[in-house]
Image (cartoon, rainbow, N blue to C red; front, side, top):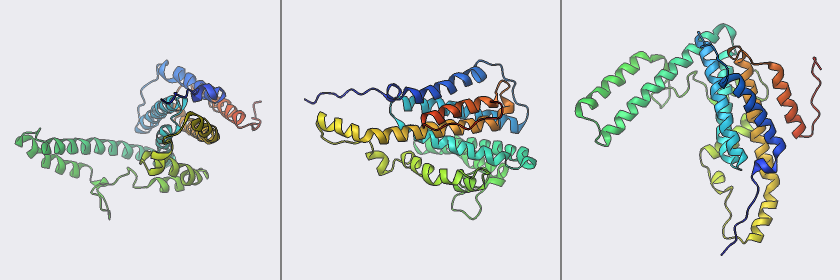
Length: 283
């Protein structure tokens, strides 16, 4: 019978990295969860605030997975964080149209809710859990949805509906971003993280080791440790910086937020990489 191999989890192996995520989570918990924040009164404010909350929730989930050596699954959520940032950047890219884009974003949300309901009714009808009267209303609901959300009907595409609120692919969003880093992030990082999201062969086999002895497992662990740390650090660093960028865009919706704190977090990240952080004007 093979003896189990006990290895300290990532949080215990790399405490200096998780001090960063703990710092971020604790501070945002004070600014968001423990503070009475006024309800946004505009579509743009609602989208910004909701994006910050979504980003914070994603980050907390990413941290839990990273702490217990599930960087592959954390990468899936990190990809979601990247898309969240790209969509938010698209909304605020043009100040004159930001309000209209925010309204369109919210309208697309309502369309998604309607389509989900239509699909659910159709599924329940196919499995015999809907009456004939209820099923007859499905066509009416579909027609009503098309009449209300005409702007999102597919144009020159196989799909009946647009798959994006703004009609842009993730690559297009990255390309249109004001940040020159978005395309490199898309090409190198987004594609890797997508492998795990889509359960590609690479993602399925990445943690598989067949019929090996404890000694072989130990050698395998040693050989993989550097790669594991590199990927864990990559996911943690990118998720943190993307969260900071989302916070900066939505700063007006978080009353206690201080932009200087962003740089304190970045200092910690520089330190983990052994790089001296640049001097700031107020230092």
